[in-house]
Length: 379
Image (cartoon, rainbow, N blue to C red; front, side, top):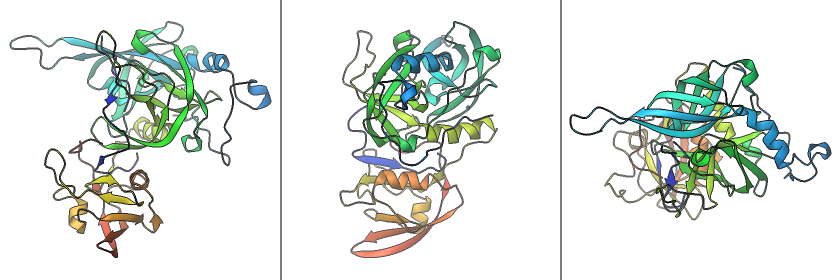
């Protein structure tokens, strides 16, 4: 049984980022009533000590007991499409985790957990099993919604936090099924916020939460919880140089979760029956040392131009090396901020980019397109 957790090679936020950008909105592989907690001013880091009574957060045991009934184990069966000459397709199984989203039976997980699924089985914390159907998926944000017909006694939605309020050093708890061990609970802190990770279709997911809580194959799609036991994100990827005897990667203390604000936005669209669309610019960006988001100057390793042919960027006259410093007058300080800003727009909308080129400043209008199914390169 494979337990699916995408592994990142090299630095996550460095190097070139394939930006064929999205509006609307990676992981361990193998949502309508939204429970959402808005931010109330600046977040104050909480402690696990002292319990909830003194306003300092829950203990780890309290978090586990409150949240675990809303965390499920997910086993997915897929068919091997290339089993061999004249050989029938063979079933494969992968395992991940999910979060009960509402009392109607919607469960959130990572897209890569259920990708290509022919059968999905959910196991609740008390051992009850139920077949699940895939409601919808979005490879660009690695978010999926599955649905189960289960008794109301099995459905315990977990409240979602505002991921924009997360701060470095805040304590977190992860619950999932690493290496086929459901209900495994690990702890750590938020190591950093605003990371960029690569989606299954090679686009960039901005705003990811980095944590040192141990997550491993089988944790994909499970919750990363704050000190109040609310979901800050869905565990998605690890960066590692370690592997076990079966060749599966294991935790090195650098894990990433899809931010809850992204998860909620995409899940609500999928549950409502809408297809998720993403705006598309068509440029490949490199990190700029002087602020802003800079278009790469050289083709990538596959020989692709940093400005895709026929893309909105090409039609608007953007050039390799252009430094994007603002979108509709809003200053852009980094590549990640540019991606996140464009995420708020939709295909067909026109935006104005302020760019620096050869010592001059230009304002360029660009009509956003619809993102192709996959990016030319990964982040």
